Image (cartoon, rainbow, N blue to C red; front, side, top):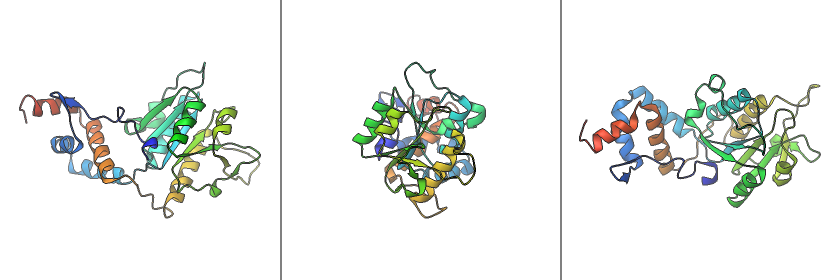
Length: 243
């Protein structure tokens, strides 16, 4: 489900010597610059990545909350994060302290408003589910997360906007037995995404679903992000004839 992954331009591999490198070439040339343990860890992470679930954050102001959502999404195997920035709002920023580097491994797509975001997912057959306490909201356990899903989390104070709720295919809540009606957005995202990932597969087996070609491409991109001055190394090997 390409709608939940990076656009081709976002995930493009480097162009060196007048041509775009392919994933297998990047992996082969950079493999020796990573330890065996690091290569194995990248392989494990890529194997657990999903293209059928992505969080959407709408109008978040607190950088710590945005970064906490990023951290939860990356840890649970999501590859993409979609950010809806409303008119007049401060452009979203991430907090590296809270995200602990998660942004390095995620694909970020920005949207100018809920309409464009919703239209994108609708066009690609992705169900849009808003986490919102509305009259017709259903418990999160009733959502079919076996379908490709974008799960929306709203502003810290106002929640998901009316425009996004109207555009969504469904609204859901996490049922709470206590007096408190809702979680903080960062907690809601962690709980919601974890539930969705478990519902995708078989309980705690949070396996990935990328195709072989997608796994190879993502592996190449992770190699590029893991090796210091990776493009300079590739250029030296391919253009300058270095080793």
